[in-house]
Image 1 (cartoon, one colour):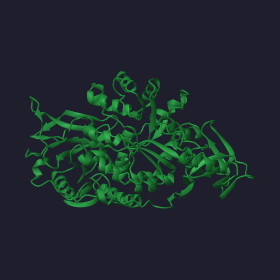
Image 2 (image 1 turned 120 degrees about the vertical axis):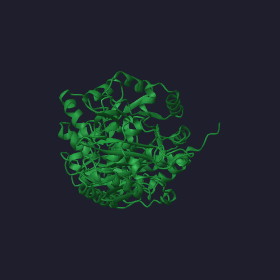
Image 3 (image 1 turned 135 degrees about the vertical axis):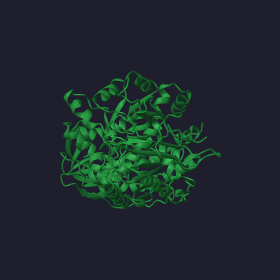
Image 4 (image 1 turned 90 degrees about the vertical axis):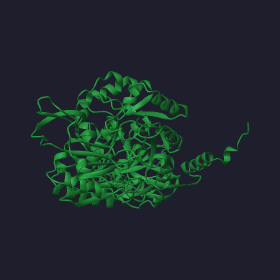
Length: 581
């Protein structure tokens, strides 16, 4: 076996340069003095200094009489914490590119993301591998670390397998919980392959409001963490089964659990050693308004978690769970110099953020926008609703009761948990009596296949409190659909036809006229806007929602994001099967 000259290896050269920097035999890049270092190992704050070379921390409290830094920074007695780690998010559901997303998250202290990408890859179909490579090319240009999780659902297995092999992909993402619980070979094959190439398993464990016993299945398969925590009971259950749980604080009550879990966690003195923080799904405008993972930390502190424990949950705990703790998650030698500077620990609000020892954000602003070209994956719109008629939106009962007073309909009740199925509603004078808190829902197959009739599903959905008008979205994962919610058929028809002129996106209509639109030009799922531009556009969407009676304060969720959640629920509960033939 040929023995290589290790002195020519990158690791050897790095160790030699860092040794020289530590002991004053060579230069170091940066010395940070007068810092209050947040030590997430001992849960203490220690005064000290940090020596950085080659983008990494090489020493804590170096002998300043011996080292030769090229630059010295005075931390001015600020707290210096590790860069924050979002343990689970869906970067495609944020609707902006990885470059744009940095503008929202990095100023809030997030320097590492663990990302699901199933909706994007699902929308790309046969181009999934190539399109993933393009979207996540040049990760070195991002001011944060981005790690992918291979799609476990909505994507054909041969495509998911190729993504799992990518260097940027660290594990198998959430797989379809219902298929796993039914013991389908496809899921076991998928997990077995991931294990065979040394990739870990993440699970979206079964809805825990139901019989908890089947959750054993996910731990048995080798899953080591779960973000499907709803309350204290499910948190405790995950810990008991050896699943590292994530506390999420998303944009909607469906995607938030901290209020339901953390107070009891504190009261019962539950250990936080393996508990992580994640966002799961957030809208960009929500991040600009309240923060990113630092918001989760502040919520935890507000519920009685100590500030250092809250920071640890959003740094070291996540790094350990994903086996990244040798490179991120702490202010310690050998780790990337991803650092967050804070004036106080009582409210986690970064004043400065470093990535690899370089200042990338200050006072809530990203200093340099990443220049990455995504033009290869921008698509030309392809309308598909020719022949669609207003009558196609009409709500028709699946069944009428024997006495003629009840009609059975498809209905989706949004909330935690969500309920989707066929339910009975009052039926008078040949019409369904629509409850005050529900609106019409139509899901349209955008491109009929193989000469078959277009698939259309009409029903009702809750939590859309609009008084008039309609809103619509393109959901392209599995197969392209246009989802429309409205108060009347005329505006619903107008919304669907108008949105069909875009590759993807979100759109509102009032009195037959488009009042706001957010195009998604990258495989129908992602916008080309910067995060700041996106934030301004969502203000227009919010105003348009207000004009038709949809109030975010009442719904706790922007109307466009609620359309996303609705599409996920329809898919997850297997009710709308528009998968390609």
